Amino acid sequence: MEKTIEQLLPLLDVRQGIIISKQGDATLGFRVELPELFTLSDPEYEAFHQAWLKAFRVLPKHTVLCKQDWFIHSGHTPDFAKESFLDRSSERFFNERPFLDHCCYLYLTKKPADRKNATSLFSSLTRPSLLPKETLGAQALQDFRDACGQFQRILQDSGFVRMFPLGDNDIYSETHKVGLLEQYCTLSKSKGEYLYGDVAFDEGLLINGKYAQLYTLGDAANLPSLCGPRITYDRYSTDRTPFSVGFASPLGQLLSCNHLYSQYLFFEDSAKTLQRMESKRLRLQSLSAYSRENLIARDATNDFLNEAISKQRLPVKAHFNILVWTDRKEELNDLKNKVSSALAQMDAVAKQETVGAPQIWWAGLPGNAAEFPMNDTFDSFAEQACCFLNLETGYRSSTSPMGIRLGDRLTGRPVHVDISDEPMKMGIWYQPQQVHTRSFRQRQILFYQSHGSQLLRAGYPCGTGGCGAQLQRALRYGGRVLLHL
Image 1: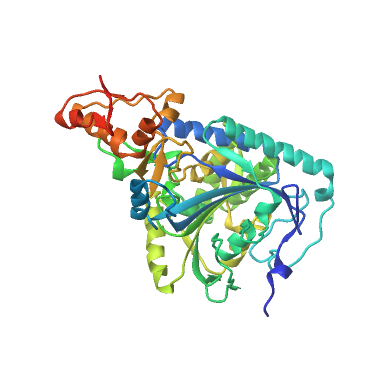
Image 2 (image 1 turned 90 degrees about the vertical axis):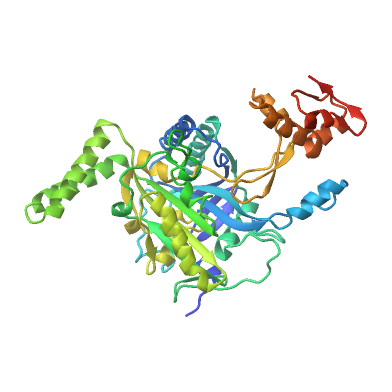
């Protein structure tokens, strides 16, 4: 029997930026700006990792962190209204240049203390529920808002991210504006689409006419044996100089297809979690004489408890999944190969979800993270689970009026970069090493790119240094003689 989305939608209301679900969960959302890809050093990756760990510790118990990274194929939108012939030619050259557009959202959900955990069998997709009394209390909501504010402040003080709270208008759609709920249910954020499709689970995932596949990292047996804040990117590394990227970057900006990388961390009562693990260890101790698997599991559980107590680790439950989609069904095998290759770079193995895919997809709705099926999670520490968070985004154009246009090294998309004013504000000064490289680059910057033209037209004194016939000929530009240092 068909059901409308209004009958099944798990959200009750959105007030003052807080999403209230029909299960009594309260959610605060943020739009997150991450560092650009290939811009962080090894110490910065470690510092960013520690900032996340500090922020985790201020979250109250019964909190769910859901971080969603959207990667959607887009094309460069040109601006043909520019006056200069060179600017218009440049826009025409880069017209519709394909690239992977990235946006990141982070949701913090507070569950009622007496709320039962959802499973693949019992989900709000199949059953309704009444509101618990705790969620309706003003003090409980204020305490949760204060904890989220501390979480936001710790991450922003690290200097690596900027977080912007989501408002009511960001969740719901408006005329000619796609909200986050509609974006998730249609797998599209295009403003020009006015046709909507169904969501079907009978033959795989079919969302708004798009064929989707869901791959999950929900079992500790499929995880890599070692993890850290960074890994070496072999493509740009040499034997002597390793080039670092984030540990989860192969599932982020480096995965060249339409996909949604969702990361879930569940912060429960640590004392009860350790008590549950201790009971599990005792059961395995009793059964260890009958099976070697039980003996190994007992030792692993014992090591987990020892590390949690001796090193004051924060135990969490975690889950990570990748949702990929395409308009053509014959491309699904190609997407599967891309995801498998990306996971192989992390030494991980993903499971393609079939039966449990609807419940996992349903829990990804903004404000519905508490409905995630807990049978698809694994126990870990915050230090290890944090390594699987996507830490980087694509290149962003500078808002400075001065600058030159450079190409994204992955896709060739034009990016406006200020190489003088903004770096000098941060104490960075560009100084080339070789004379012939300096002459060529300075000639390009000063005379053929937009930055040099803007500086000269604005009347700035421009100076250059070096030697060579090309540089000598380049010292005259539009009748203006430049100082040769």
